[in-house]
Amino acid sequence: MHYVEYGKENNNTILLLHGGGLSWWNYEDVAKSLQKDYHIILPILDGHAESDKSFTTIEDNAAEIIAFIDAHFGGSVFLIGGLSLGGQILLEILSQRNDVCNYAIIESALVIPSKLTHSMIKPAFESSFGLIQYKWFSKLQFKSLKIKSDLFDYYFRDTCAISKKDMIAFLQANSLYSLKESIKNCSAKVHIFVGGKENKAMQKSARIIHQALQESVLQVLPNLYHGEFSINHGNDYSNKIREITAE
Image (cartoon, rainbow, N blue to C red):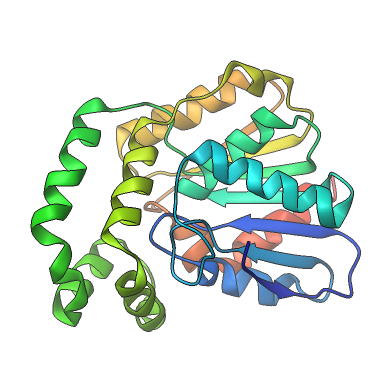
């Protein structure tokens, strides 16, 4: 597994799992803000630019990250956070290993499977994938994602480096993921965040996760779109980590 690392001299380790189609820079501002106090690891998810293997399943990615934690951190870390696809992988990690972390932050993770969306992904990318290589098209996509403008160069570089096969694979996995029954055994203190301007399925997913994890905390972030909390408001996200872990 390839990853970017900050503050490795510190003891408490935090893993942050980026969203689909993005990369470690999803959490760059957060890592820089926290690096004096925490050891920050930003894994590059399978099938993404600079990863070391193709994407197979959310379950496989979760197992790989657990194996990494076992090999390097004795089976558990201080905190794991995840956005969107990264949030789904985090939910799967918590389902596979109930004591893998002390704290977890789940941001905008979809857990309502959609067979319709799944069926549309491959045809859509078969016809339009080549356009990704054009900067004008990438700028249109980037604008729709509500990501701050200074991350465009990262986005364009890394999107162009993702294969069509991997793009389809992780988007299809994202569209079909649902919670496992074993998530109820999670012992971590879980905080769930969703943007107030996200779609109904995402907001309903946040409530489903909250109901499955009875001791979790759910917070709707007013006026924020999908992924804005960790990507565009890194200082606020960092402060929230400090607040959560000080409880």
